[in-house]
Image (cartoon, rainbow, N blue to C red; front, side, top):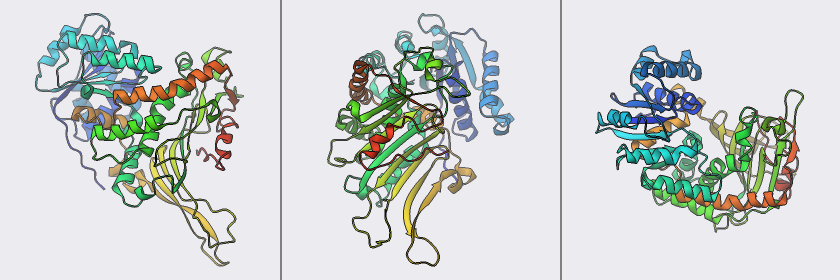
Length: 485
């Protein structure tokens, strides 16, 4: 299967924080890959902007080293690397002062017909300063786009303040709040499966769905970034954004059309229909020291920290489609493996004609995000061979890398999302009211944890989190799915 690549219009992409880790690890390699498949047109320019004093040649050398480190020599074409590097430029810019902005404006004015996009790969504290100076120096045009990374606030008040800062200089249709989870092929395929096939949508409701599990497990800890992480925790770092988006795409009503605002309107309805959480609906944890390394408290340098590295939630959605169907969410650091999936578990048949079967599990649709993106449908069949009607469960598996062949290799999420910015397509980006609604739901339970003053429960590194998290599911007669390696 050969995918169709449609080139975008000529553009100038300014990456603020171009010498930082995110730019080197994700943004610049993603842009190289888009050039390699001929999606980036001739004449497009990528301009690095940062406070470091650096020549264009030095910046190009740094980007060349980054491509070698994060793509690898085997994945690079010498001629394409040279073409990509030759399209790079660099400007030293003071985000909180006026130095360098005139130089940047002059460079962009050389190509007045180019689309202008500004990627703010910087600390959120600089978002307002940069957006103000883009407007002050006449760099931001009515057709410009601005891209901001999480965290998009730390609570409702700060999220509103951030939205107000950005709205001073950009209209909502120009603001792209990026969540790389939405750029994953499997996440987008969730919408295709639901709304592009008559098979699933009639069953996608509480009449047929027993429960839904969403797991985002990470095998790494917070060593090296403990001071930052301890100010957020799993709820702020993962649930409020990434997992909320997965929940919304799973639970949303069919939009009237595949249009950015139509899709985001339905996601917003899901968030507003979430029932308030109680402490009894949650389990929080911190990973213990192991024989090989320290625990969470060691990594953050605070023996009294109450910040969670693991959280599990039982969530209910108060609407006609999902009344009575629990959604179980869990995420954590130092779990058994790096593993993310959405499992939609259907109810068992209302009557079984196979009395010898003691327990008949329902079908399950498994959307696997990482590793090995793909979709699996668990079905019950007769076990081959003699001996009567023996039933077994087997997966109907669609692992994309295998099914689509070499030409269907999974693009990085950032590749799709950055090209969507250039195209002006906001479907896979969060709207301001969506971010605020997510914080409005998240804030009360964080305050309840703070008021209770209880420490998160300890759990072993390499496990599935605190054993108490199993009570969230077992009280309803369910079990968490295994965190697979």
